Image: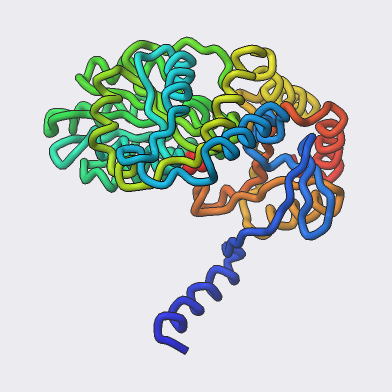
Length: 373
Ligand SMILES: *Cc1c(COP(=O)(O)O)cnc(C)c1O
């Protein structure tokens, strides 16, 4: 066996012993939150397709039309020949939604953070990031070569202390946090963070990956980024901000410049999804209402988003729980370290407009009868 394989095999064995090994499982998604896993028909409480738009007939039809009109692939990066005319419309819709001057669409949310953060912060700068920030915010910060300081989750006092002792040592200052934390479902204090950024001559960027595209008011001058692959049901990432910021990102963000543009059908799907949301704002309320119905059924603290965690602690216990749910017809994802802190392995339950009430009641009943709370 090659030397590298020998080393990697040992590492895989270690992961197996810790019940920490992960591997993709083939799955077929259908309408109404159905998903087939190894020929088992399950109801998914694991997707981020919060509005069910990935399966919406208008979204699918627009994508089909675009593939007929433009072909399957973009052919080059956006700065070469890949900048399909649909980008303008999509960026216009995103800027309008976030009430900013302009927007820029990236290949994915991950690529957006890897591109935006190094464009905005460098060696002489400092980044303050919430401890629970998503891996790609932290990866973007590392790639920027700015000094990265992490404050305890949603702890403004800790952030204030870090600012007091460190801010003066650096030039620019960037704050990073998430509108809705992906593994906990709670929210960042955006108004307070924006105020602190202003007072410290800094900027705040909020990651909206798990936002539901409902109408929300945000403080001026903050940078919004997010993904088109969750509530929008398609694929791609975006950033919204001032015209100057967007112009600068379009000419400097390496993950935009050195990566091929999105396929035209993907852009068309995102556009159709945003039009549906504009025409039916009630749609965006449904996942949160479903999550609140679930937390009410189980006497849990009221859900703040479409994500509700049930923390078990040990990897083994959470895998066992996920297996029991699967046997009863539900797919709920078990999330383990390093995605979440050590000893906080959990079921991460996500609610979608595609669910109906009886599915939520059945899931709650199982959790109650298993005594997991
Ligand atoms: C999923 C996610 C991303 C990445 O978005 P993709 O489009 O899936 O690459 C970024 N930030 C957060 C908080 C996420 O949950």
